[in-house]
Length: 232
Length: 269
Image (spheres, one colour):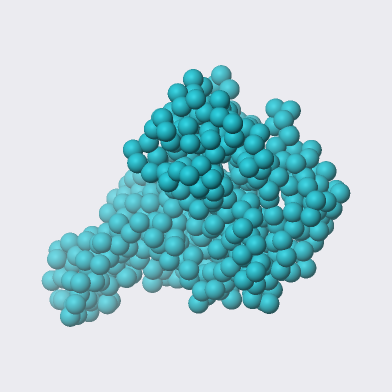
């Protein structure tokens, strides 16, 4: 235990401990799946919200903006009650599974992706609406074009969603149950080690998680820079 | 739109790739003391190897664990608050309660013991001394088994705890001990969590050994008549194993730093 937390973190990684690798793998799988679903739904919805004009639109915009601050523990509790055997979706048997964790994180990510997409697309629409009009294409037809055009700005929203999901513990602890080897992720493992008084190990796990988040962001940044150059 | 379709496809694939339900597993709602001490890490692999049944442990406070059972979200509850367990069975949520093991509670506090709890004749007197001195006390405050035991001791001491000196953390045992180590404050903890707890600071055991500090654990199958989804057969197999000589020996074998944490007592029922 003479190692500092950084030394311990390094040693943990170097040891290739299968339990740790499994925890890291599950964390990434849950978070990336939630980000993928959040984007698949949030990007088109956000763009549609930017272009659509309907009564009560501003209320919807404000609600999604506010939901960016939805406390994870509240989202977790709501999904817990939904998925519980005594709840409306109980027969699916999804409580305490990775799928429940994906669902919880998707709900946390969705408002972020929708709101940030809406704001990006609104700006692009202001810029290009004359051209779309002259081409005679409607607002709905403009959605894919605008999303493609704004892809580099939209990446920030996607990364914000990823950040929220990978850092989150309140919701997945409730709906996943932190079951060893099944629903234990980096953040729930950190919570567990803290409660065991293993503060050194908890900090080491935190360092590994931060390293993963950093690598993911660097990867996204590099990929977007490369794509920009290729696109000229 | 191709991109979206590809994204949807990828999401669906990724979802399908996540193992939702293993072929044969049961869910056990238990307490932080059994999970955090590492007991389950020791005994469950033995059970799984013998029966092929995987055990998913959700570690909660006793109050929450019983609620999880009541909602049908666990097949078995494994907790330590006998009156609450008996109510659980009496109300029909559980089939039958089995004694499994016990450990005991200890009063921990600052090593120099400013309240003089070490000199107390029994556990309620030790707590009364803490209250009389107005020394800081960290309570779970979460309706867990430990919290219920603590409340019973305050009642026996004739003290209604509250005020500046009484800190309710509303968290698990480990989190509460982290708070107690920081203040430093007195706190009631189960011995298992204490032995395996690393961040003790200046805390030490100041009172132990009173029979009133006895902490029995019981295991109950959630009633399949209330919740047909309960895996009654596999759940009962787990209970039967826990109270069998083999399960009892596995519990007794579990040691940290050479100290036995839990004492099997299934034969006592």
